[in-house]
Length: 115
Image 1 (cartoon, helix red, strand yellow):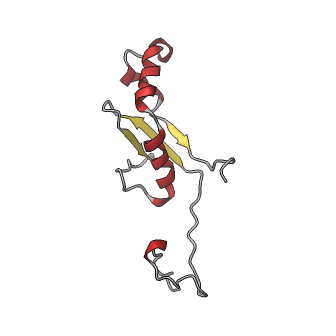
Image 2: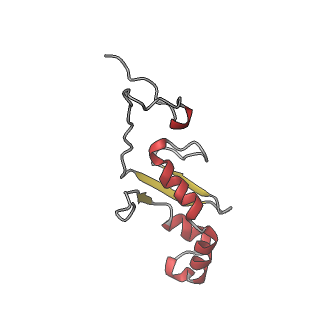
Image 3: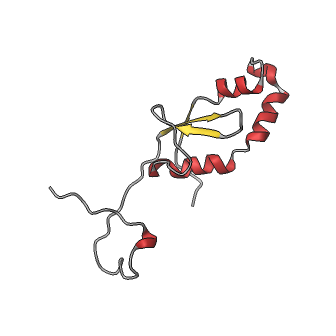
């Protein structure tokens, strides 16, 4: 059995690439688990159970979710909110609370309201 050809990035193909040939489509399945943690520096740790993703080196299937987390999660606001009610987290400091409660998995699913 022949392997399928490498999938070029859409920006790298010739202008007539889509004009009457076969196009390989790669399906990216939603629903994978992503682990999220916050370092003391405020940087996010994002990965799976087996490995952490370096910034810019996330596998394609996780890229959108990881990019969204890194761009949209306001870590300073999160830290401030935790600090305001530290007793509720049963922790001695913000870092301990974040490690305890934000070190778990997040289930990434498709947004049913997305266009």
